[in-house]
Image (tube, rainbow, N blue to C red; front, side, top):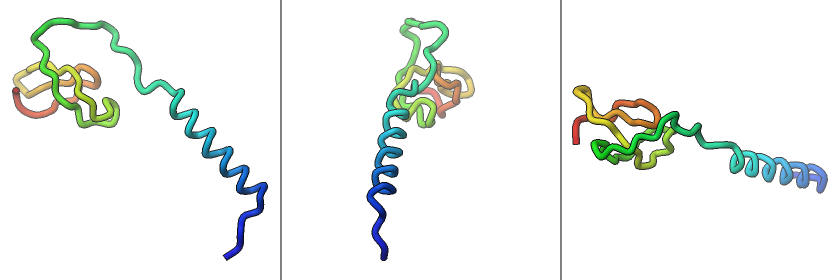
Length: 78
């Protein structure tokens, strides 16, 4: 197995650092258009990558719980 040249190793390290910092600085998602503060919301985990599997507010509808962050229907009523 051949070893990497020092320049190539440095370039790979710099690329990894750049990608890591870009991922940290990029906004995770846009802010909600209107903040609702009513007490009728149900807090449940949203298992989508957009909501990052975090606990978010859900509204109870006849079809199930609808996430306020992404609009995904997440199963039955609470």
